[in-house]
Length: 422
Ligand SMILES: Cc1cc2nc3c(=O)[nH]c(=O)nc-3n(C[C@H](O)[C@H](O)[C@H](O)COP(=O)(O)OP(=O)(O)OC[C@H]3O[C@@H](n4cnc5c(N)ncnc54)[C@H](O)[C@@H]3O)c2cc1C
Image 1 (tube, rainbow, N blue to C red):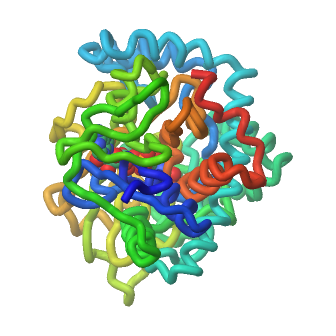
Image 2 (cartoon, rainbow, N blue to C red):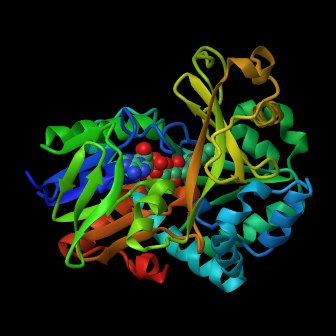
C-alpha cells in the first residue's frame, strides 16, 4: 500500500520524523540502506544532547584554521587536500558564512531548534520508556587557557539572553561536579556547567523509536538502497530502490551526509558535505563501586568529548573534511586515546587503545551551519544537515517537519531552515 510519507534514511533524523508523523495518524515507511537502523552517523556519536553547543563550526577565523591544517598546524577542523575537488563550491559557501553576523544568525536559529528539541527528546524518552543510559541533566565544558574560556563565555552570555542556563565555575568547582576531573584541576583555567544539557545513547534511543514506529503500524525496510527519485509531470512520486520502485504521496530525504547523492539526479545540488569524526568506546570498564565519571565533559582545547554511557566510556572528536573516506587511521585513534588520558589520567591507566571499539561517522554539515527542514517541491521534502547537532536536534526537527507537512502549528519559526535557501 502507498503510504502518506516515506523517509529515505533510518538514522536519528529519519526515525524522529517518522515517529512525529505516525503519532499524528499518518502512514509512514522508512527505507534504510544498511542492514539495520541507525548504523551510520547516529550509531556511536558523543551522546551529548547539548543546546549549549549550537554554534556552527564555521565561525570567524575558520578559513585561517583550515589553511593551517593543510600545513599540519593544530586546528579544530582539518582539511584533507584529496577532498578539495569535491568540496570547493561548498567550501567557498562555508567560508562566506563565517562572518560574525551570519554565524550569530545561524547560532541563534540552531539554539532555538535545539532548545525545543532537548525537551521533546526527554518527553519521548519518558512516554516510550526508552532506556538509553540517560542519567540526569548536566554537562561540563572545561578550558585550559583564559583566552578560549573568554571566547566561549562571550558566546554563552549571548545564548543566556535567549534562555540558555549556564554557570561559570573554577577548575576546583568543576571537580566537585565531576570528581574524576580532580587530577587535572591545576591545568584548568575554568569551566562552564550547563545544567540543562545531558548525555544519552543515541543508538539506543533510535532502537526505542523504531520499536514504537513498528508498533504503530509503520513499515521499516532495511537493506534497501535508494538509487534515484521517481518523478511524474514535475512531482516526485517515489523512490527507485534496488528492491524495486517504492511510491508514496510524499518522499522525505533524511539520508544524512548521503542526501546529496539522492538529490543530485534531480538536479538539486545541496550545499552539504560530510565532516568525519571518530569515537572510541571502552565497554564495561566503569565499576559502580568506584568513583567513575558521571557527567559528559567537553575539553575545549582538545576538541573532544568524554561521555560515560552506562558502564562504558566513550571519547569522541576530530572533524575532518576528507570526503567519504572510510579509513580508520591508527594515528587518529591513538590521538583519541591520548585525549582520554589528558582528561582522565587515572581512569585511563588501566586501559589501552586496543581495548576500545573504534568507529567513525560523517556529520552532514551544511554550508551555512543550519539544517534543511521543509518542503522542496511537489511530493518531496527534506530533513538533513544537522552537522554536530543531529542527536540534539533530532526530535525537534522531526516535529517541525511533521507540522510543516501536515499544516499544523509548528511552535517554532522554521524560516531559517527553509531548504530553498540552498
Ligand atoms: C564523532 C561524532 C560525534 C557526534 N556527537 C554528537 C553529539 O554528542 N550530539 C549531537 O547532537 N550530535 C552529535 N553528532 C552528530 C550526529 O551524530 C549526526 O548529526 C546525526 O547522527 C545525523 O543523523 P542523520 O539521521 O541525519 O544521519 P545518519 O545517522 O547518517 O542516517 C542517515 C541514514 O540514511 C541511510 N541512507 C543513506 N543513503 C541512503 C540511500 N540511498 N538509500 C537508503 N538509505 C540511505 C544511511 O544508511 C543512514 O542510516 C556526532 C557526530 C560524530 C561523527
